[in-house]
Image (cartoon, rainbow, N blue to C red):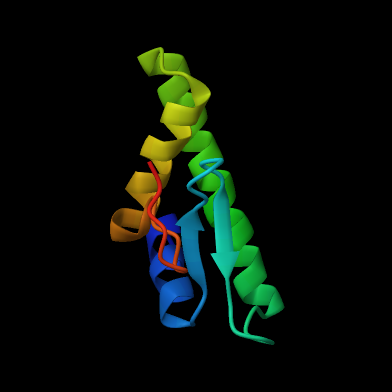
Length: 91
């Protein structure tokens, strides 16, 4: 399963991935008992993919780390990048 497919599967399973607007870090929310070990492993895989993509963008593009992470997360999360499911928007 590709990282993008994992992201979609997580969303379909009720696990919300988003960027924390204050820190730009990847966060998740799941219903009580909804984050099973296999889904938790997928969250970790997506986070690692975002970190890898950010490192590549930072190195190749001369970007600062925060910008590189936000761009990499946008690649992975699509319309959920920078949006806190609680309702506040990130930068």
